[in-house]
Amino acid sequence: MGLLNVIKLANDYNTAKKILKGKNINKVELRKILASIREIQDRLDAIKDIVEERISKTKNMIKELLKKVK
Image 1: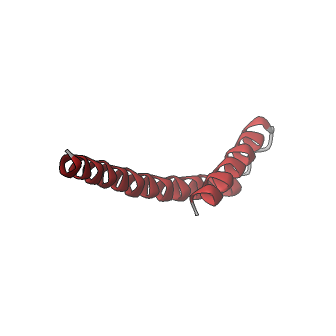
Image 2 (image 1 turned 60 degrees about the horizontal axis):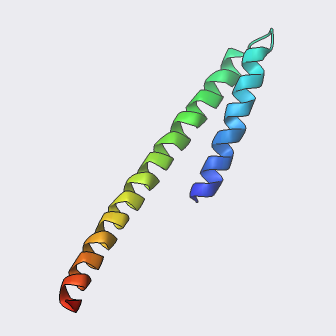
């Protein structure tokens, strides 16, 4: 799920860059792309939080296991 979001974000980013380089900026299309980019960014932030939480839990588990081994 995260990889697909990153790919979509990159695609939207490149589309936005093309629109901004063009002389005729379609504001409606640009707003749609900006909304999509913000939505994907929020999803990726949520995934990042979940991953960081699981990494923290794993580190704590490893510490506890090391204590029991000693």
